[in-house]
Amino acid sequence: MDKIRESLLKKSIASKIERRGKIISLICLALIVGVVFLIFYFVASRGLATFFQNHVNLWQFLSGTQWNPGTTGTNGQPAVGALPMIVGSFLITILSALIATPFAIGTAVFMTEISPRRGAKILRPVTELLVGIPSVVYGFIGLQVVVPFVRHTFGGSGYGILSGTFVLFVMILPTVTSMSADALNAVPRYYREASLALGATRWQTIYKVVLRAAIPGMLTAIVFGMARAFGEALAVQMVIGNATLLPQNLVSPASTLTSILTMGIGNTVMGSLQNNALWSLAMILLLMSLVFNLAIRYIGRKGKLSNER
Amino acid sequence: MKKSRVIQLLGLILIGVLVGFGYTHRVRTDAGESITAVGSTALQPLVEAAGEQYSSTRTGIFINVQGGGSGTGLSQIQSGAVAIGNSDIFAEEQSGIDASKLRDHRVAVVGIAPIVNKNVGVTNLTQQQLIQIFTGKVTNWREVGGKNLPITLINRAQGSGTRKTFESYALKGHQSADSQEQDSSGLARSIVASTPGAISYVAFSYFDKTVQAVNVDGVRPTKANVRNNRWRIWSYEHLYTGKKPNQLTEQFINYILSTAVQKKLVKQLGYISVHDMQVQRSATGKISPMK
Image 1 (cartoon, rainbow over the protein chains, first blue to last red):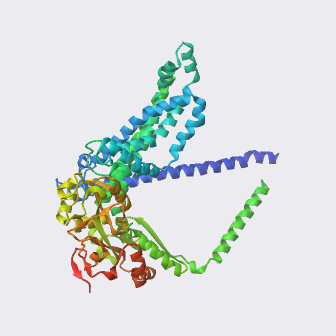
Image 2: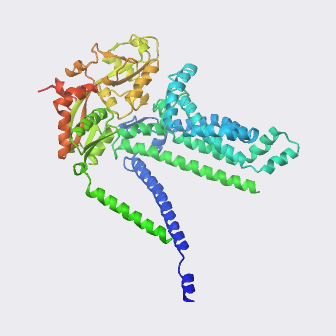
Image 3: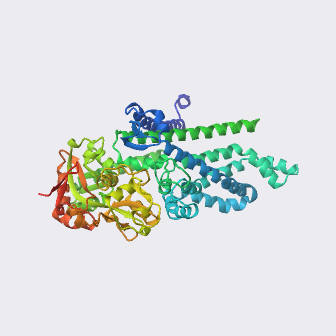
């Protein structure tokens, strides 16, 4: 009798193991959250030092066009105007997303609606292969192929927003494609069946039903691609020319936040204004990726509500 | 359940015994004597090669060499995180560095010269023309005796040692106009080679057939001209240490300064030996004959 009582009251081995597993996964979670917070804290503490310690005007930082930390600009303040980089980053991101989206949606429609079997067998592995190519390879191809091509076709030195857009287009295409394909696949089968039963053609079904139903998912895919384009450093740095000038046209040398960051960080001393200004750029990058993340969540939630209605 | 516990325990004991055995029988000469040198990528090949030679003759000594840029080198040595900070520039020239807390060891000299694309039709520029080109006052090669081609400036990244040297000694302290920037000499050279009308500047060791080195005021960029300061665009390569470096660090720096390294390795890698210099230059740019 006692033995049974004891075994009922004592914790079983299985429940002990479960508790242990719970603790381990909690520790892992806490560690990751902690690291994220530490990164935010570190970047913010360094990045804000530009404004609080070096007394740079925030508005001048965001709207100034002179970037030469360490020297004083025409207004007597340190020349830390980040506008050329901000404009460059946004231009290149938006342009590459604009070009990539039609291609990605077209490919995704082919993969899921028109020829699912070939899509699954050939196209998907190929796009996934594109994701795996290291960005330095993209940059190198950009330098050797895209830049001369742009120079011969559009004039200029070939380095600039346009070359960067072409390189990024290829880089984000697979991400946007495979995520759009997932979104299209997630459209319930009965939507298509109902549409076809009503006498719609395949094109009408795709255009008026499937694509409409998959809009939230595809928007998420595009924002994801933009986030990747915004954060890409190496490949862009190799083809954009890295001139801290406001781009006058698409073939004039420009720069992005990431390209100036990677070029400058090794040449500055921790704690100096030059270094702090670079951290401020990093802070802008971090905030933007946060914005992209929030946008993805917002779109996802919106999409769910309209489906349930 | 029981059985696997026993196996686990045995495994733990086995690992413990092995680690203990390894610890007690470790090679004593490998007692972790190592120094780390961080900084300038221009100096990295020399320190790396010298470090390899140095540690190959002495068991258990390792010289770690990392890049990261002159600024990194100087800030790391200032904070005491490494034994040696490699730099292309004087610590006095870098903002945020207290040069009085560091000791300077000049181990080599590097000559820097303008390079242009092969098709611009110019092989000589006066210093005045060079300044005009880099400050954006001259924008076509025709104006300096070349072909009718727009000039494309390729600068090195802001804060790069090569750029600082070029701006102080080739442009007489004028700042270069905003233009394209590249963060390595190799990339700058390959871009000059492939871009019509491009001009940049690299260390002598980066000269090759794909680009045209330019004479300044009729002086050819050669090592002999650097030694007597007829070619004025050159800089020291510095190894910075704290005021009191440890013994191994001191020995290693002496090794790099020894005749054996200076006569062979330094030359092989395209640097100019400090022993050959007929002049010396101070942090403020003052030239005086070598004693």
